[in-house]
Image 1: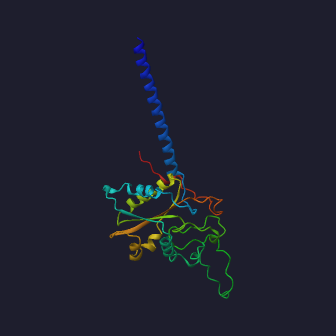
Image 2: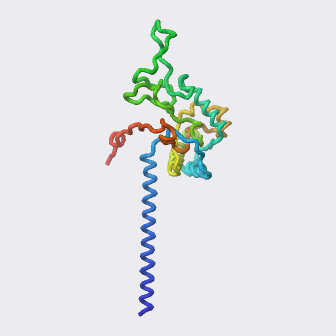
Image 3: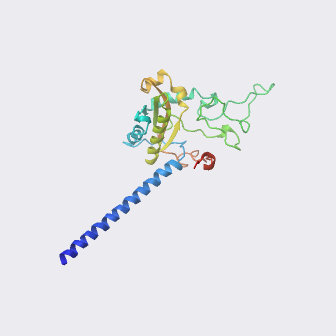
Length: 262
């Protein structure tokens, strides 16, 4: 009888231990889900980065997230070029700078001053643009617009571009596979954010970099075009950079963006 009681007791201890492990596993899963959900719904584009380098091994984890992203028929029609070399980043940044309006070339945001009225030529132009002045229609997509009620586009702080973060990932793909490339970029961005980094996804650089010179520099495979650029680094805080903290653009309401049939 004593032996039977010991066996029953051992079984109960095992079951309770298993239940405890299961509970902890579920808790861990819930915590991981919460972290991932915040990345997908709450994390904003980083516009200011510190000079801190990417930790050893983290760049490979981020790139692996892109390599393992889903694609149509698992064709994986992409290529990733990771750039940390400062000289190469500067060349890419210079290429981007050549596409900006003249007033942007010195690193300061703003638009070229408006034409002076007849008879005012040669005099000092206004200190800022009239309220409501926006970038031209052919400006890069990443070029910021003046916020509603803003006092002048020229007062907006500069925003991050190539060379402003320690890691630049250039994503190329075959023509027609841009959606697949986008999924890879999103995967890498989410992985970077889960590792504690900030990210910014840009498509404007494609206008400056899709030529033979830069494709060769970046080892873009034949038959592919650059589809996007992801920059990664530690996000700056208000302490690191007084201009680093600013309100994000308001998101559209869920009901305005989603149609449910059924």
